[in-house]
Length: 367
Image 1 (tube, rainbow, N blue to C red):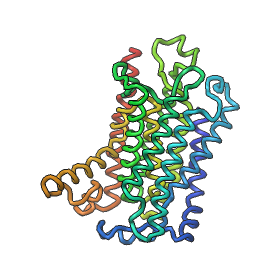
Image 2: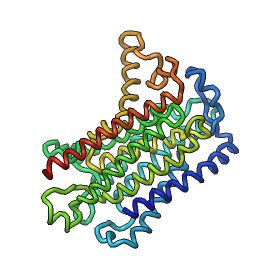
Image 3: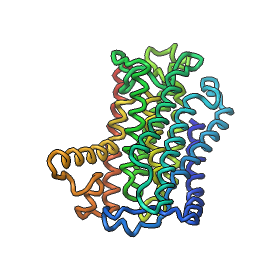
Image 4: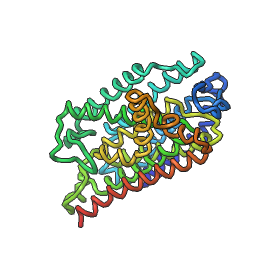
């Protein structure tokens, strides 16, 4: 537990005090966020606000992970933790960093061209596809000394579903789909000051709890496994908890500067990175389908865009005033702060339901 707390504390401090540095650097570089003319009129006042702030919390998380491992070396719990860095950490932090790199390229092109046209949709998807595939192969084809891989060949809900074995190739496809879906879901949510950051904090916090709970009831802990009939068959759950807690805390530090009125935006660098990390956490904890509930706000906002496109292409009519969904409420007259807070409440409810299902499954098995 101490290592998780250390990682979270270091991430928060680096992000809180590092984000103002990023604000000054990106402002000096004239890395202002281009604003689409088709969006709500209130957004035009945000023109010029520095973007690419996700770089700050990505860096904070990586340094915090290292600090967490320094703390681990002083603990007796080290005996059931893997050597640093573990393959789980490489996959999760790799997804965080390299999905962030794809987003950074998109942000950079927007700034260079002085408009909202960054990478093409195909280019962005191709980048996500390459990153997702590379880390899917590592997650499924590189086992630990006990034979456990980061990802599983089964579709999972609260744990692997035994009869849903899709094989390694099928699991790679599922892995890539989860990464791309979650990355784009967070990216679509990042449309109002602090909205995606706050929702991500809740989701990452949930995965920190899940990872630590799995660590305390882990099949890799031989003493626990001998004494109990049920344990979680995952790889490196303490690593999962540390990374999720560090990323959540880093986002809290970033939210200090990103909340309305935002002094910096996370940009696609932050949004795609966070989505990649959340998708990786879902696969690593064997909660792939449960992530649809835990990340319910991202799913709702993504589906609002899908519904809008399908409706317009098939009937010529729009279901919403504008999509994604938060812009619909802006045009309906809701203030930005009201929308953000209420959507955070929705995200919190989804997280609570997801955690409730996770814990109820444990009670049902142990009872």
